Length: 136
Length: 122
Image 1: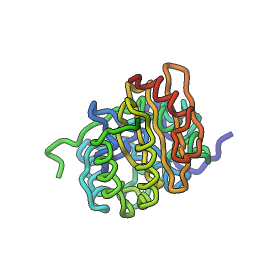
Image 2: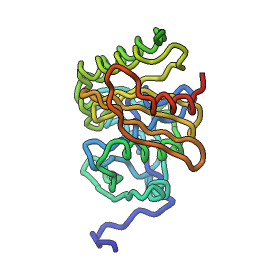
Image 3: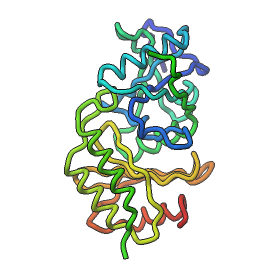
């Protein structure tokens, strides 16, 4: 059963970006560690929908996240909404003023080992995209 | 004989230093504490000689992580908490996985040593 919130749901083929501002979340082989997908503060994991965004706009959102730390933006880990749902998780639009494409991956189990297992599954299918040198 | 991988201790120190402030991940992460660092250090010291060295990371809920990784579906991650709990998860092929929690009392639990052996044979 779904609840009609008035916000269109996210299609299975939509790409979702998790921005990486901690270099050790990326392995030497340019894959992403599951650490990047641990929900915190529990129970939500913040992501940004690619939907209707040019690449530059997407990177600028990531840069704003990095600037808030402040830290370097290294790249992003992309997964599809279908990847999320395959783990029996759900992704919901949660627009905020500074990021209208903000969404949250929800439905995480409360216990940490199970969270890690889900995060490993997402990391295994995530595609890491390094930040282009031209992004300011 | 115990584990002597000097580089991983250096990496552990660097990660703990980098993540000792709030929001180190840009998404609201909690800081890694000295206690978590000390537990992780003791865990590494307790690994048997010949154990492949893990890489060190951190999670936004303030746990340090040690990872043994051969491929996306043959990988083990152990989260270390300040209380001495070891939360682990492993992918062991296309369909097999394992996860759970073991206490750490200055000896690496057999369940975790067995998983290291499956993921990253020495």
